[in-house]
Length: 332
Ligand SMILES: [Mn+2]
Image 1 (cartoon, rainbow, N blue to C red):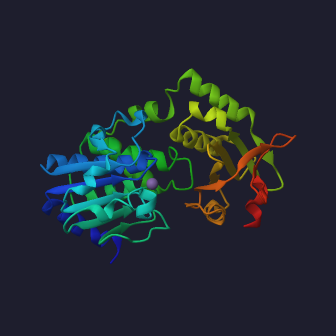
Image 2 (tube, protein in one colour; image 1 turned 180 degrees about the vertical axis):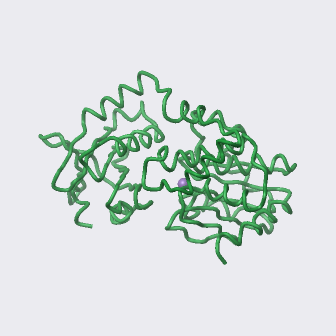
Image 3 (cartoon, rainbow, N blue to C red; image 1 turned 90 degrees about the vertical axis):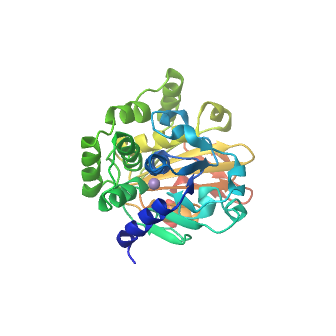
């Protein structure tokens, strides 16, 4: 059964359910939050008893979204019974950050998986997985196909997700369909100016200085067609994961000579995280090679090690028995 045929079943399941648990993935981004809050808004208006869970507290920048105040990160919510559990924007339950919690839910319930990742494991009783711009676009299609009216709050949530995952209609996930959805959501009253000012502008001077630091460290390696930059451990306290995502998206959009962007982050406890953005190259393969995952155009990984900066200024990952160069990408 294609995802399209599942729309009706999903809407029916939401109409029938009284108690609904909605899960946004850990380290939440604009898409998982946009999709979740859109569905939460509709369900709340239907008089449902809804609970929104995210293992990490959603960043303040999403404060303009309706329903955002409902999120809890208290795992106790998994000790309650539900008729329906919906996981948004997650290829599997581990990525969602709830693999250990889901088995705690008492009684029987329907598990729904709504996502757009190619790596999706189809872990739900119901799986609506479409390889399009964003999970928010999946929700948009489902609501539209089922004639669910989308008010300005739902439209703002869904447009937030589409803007986030397409980096404001600039990365390879951008499609005619995504732009048409965005156009219709704008006509429905989506507050595009709020999205622009909260997600892309409105930076504090401290944050902008960090951007300056990252820009000053940009290193282009023509051999591998990779531009890289990095955060060191001691600078991390000033940053947040959503900030580094915004920076890597920005670099991907503006750096002219490189196909691939790599932003490395030295974490505490001998861990290095990396975020890739690619244009032609399939960066999900490189991330997979390093134990991570993601999309063709955007991926990430985490490995043991620390960062070492070479004399010519480029970062590499030093592990006990090997060194990983940003150029390793062509070897995968
Ligand atoms: Mn997404």
